[in-house]
Length: 151
Length: 151
Image (tube, rainbow over all chains, first blue to last red; front, side, top):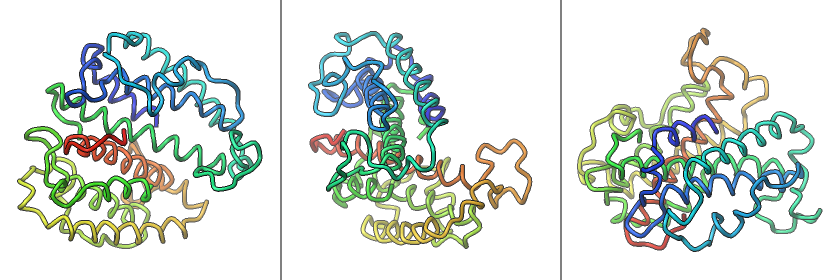
C-alpha cells in the first residue's frame, strides 16, 4: 500500500500539494494530512499503542472544516510525518498474528454489535483500501496540476 | 472492496458517468469500463478461467485512447457487466486456498523473475487496492458533478 501511495506523493511537489482538486474542494495538503490521520489511528483499533499525531483528530479527519492550505503544517513537515506513520504501521503489520484478525477491534471494548468494521482483520483491510482511495484522489490532483496522467 | 466501489457507482447517475473528471480527461464511462477490464483479468492471473469481456482489452485498459463517452457501451450495460465480474471474482476469492497465495501467478508461466506482482497473493492484494484507487477517482467525479463530497 505505502509504496503505491508514495509514487503519487513523490510525483507532486510541495507547491502542487497546495492546489485544490477542484475549485473550493480539498487541496493536496488536506489529503496528505488525511492520509496521516487515518493511518495513524490504526494502532488504536488494533490495540498497538497511541497515535503519533493525536492533534490531527478533527483537523484532517472526516467532517473537519477545510481551511486554506497555508493554515496547515507545511507539506515537507507532513511528508515526514506520513513516513513516520508508515514505519509505525509496517512494524504493526509484521507482528500481527493470524488469531488477532478475528478479534473485535479495540475501539469496540469487546462488543461487536452492529459496528461496520467488527474485527481487527476487517480494520486492517479497510484501512489499506482507504489509503488507495485517497491515492486515487491524488492522481486527479496530479492531472489538475497539468501533469500527464498516471490514471 | 466491491461494496465500497458500489456505493460510489450508485451515487452517480448514468448521465453523470458521461462527465469528464477534468476537461479533456477520463470520464466516468471509461472509469467504469476500466473497473470491469481490470477486475476481469484477475481470473487469468489466478488461473481461474477466461475473462467475461475480453473485447475490452485495449479499450478500457491502461494506455488505451480516450474516446467520447457516447462511443462506448451505455452506462447501464457497463453497470451490469461490472456486477457480473464482481460475482465471478467473489466466487474465485471464496475458493482461493492459502497455498495458492505464494504460487507464481499464471501470466508468468512459472518464472517469477523481476515481475512486479510475482505471486497470486500479491495479484489479489494489488487488484483490490487498484479498485479503490479508481473509486477515489469516482469520488472526485461526484464532486465534479456538483454533488456534496463523500471525500
